[in-house]
Image (cartoon, rainbow, N blue to C red; front, side, top):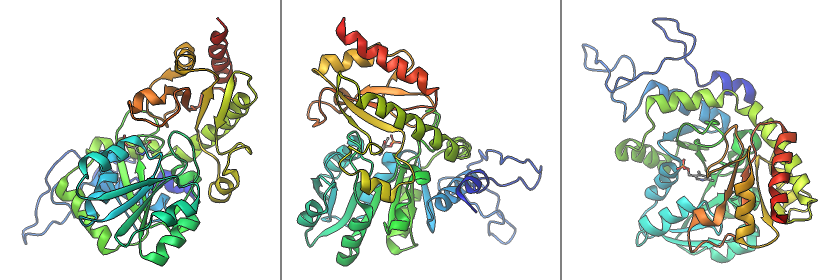
Length: 375
Ligand SMILES: *Cc1c(COP(=O)(O)O)cnc(C)c1O
């Protein structure tokens, strides 16, 4: 089956008793045992497994060409389970502009348990130089947040294989529609399903998908059930529902983002635009070689200072000024103020999640907002 078909059918099970065409939400936390003490329905207790979660994990594994998937209550819970599965003392190589929530998780919660080096992953030499005998994990995020840097997945997985190091790719920005890290030899893929997979900014969730069922994967499966950061049946239902339209939504996001990036890149009051679909992007050709479309996220620098950038963000009418991304509605955000005082994000940077509104309305809205700089 192709992606569009998987997205619609792999997360759904027709109900055997009522023949409901759309899988109902199974709220029960517990499941009846058979006379012989086993579990004829295949389920025991909802923290361990639940029909809605099983369906979500099915569709996620198939979309990413994986052997299995674990769904979590948030993207951070998913990422954190990988860190938790590592042996204490392990060394992790992570990107210098890693999603700040996961960066803080590593620095605050795993301090003293894991050691971490944050390196600019847009060049393989930087990763080579950071490898130590105790390096167990290379964490990739591509395109990255918020600078839309591109990491060459193939060259990193090749390097990691030679040294016996695990590679996990945060595929949140690209989605399984635009990028398949497991086919490029990554061991694990991580998603914040809160973003494009859910797609409507109304359900939090995360996921890990594995290329093969290994001992390390079994540890993650155990952590999912024992630590218990699992999504509710309703969250699973909502995410499965969102995924059905994912392939078509991504086409719209990519088309709109490309047009908005082109408009901004010719604007006199914009200093720089970061979007992998622009030929001016430093790793445009790497992005073209590993992505089927350049995504719906972009960021840009407003000419001027922090106040100028904030003025533009405040002046938009259709773009909602809010954090997060991947919903049908466009969002704009002054990123440095979300990331806190020690951020390295330029103070005049605005990050945009380009939604599915008509592109002419989006271009007009942002162009009028930029014009307020002249007032
Ligand atoms: C949002 C996000 C996360 C964290 O996911 P939550 O669902 O908010 O916990 C991780 N990585 C990236 C790239 C994200 O955008």
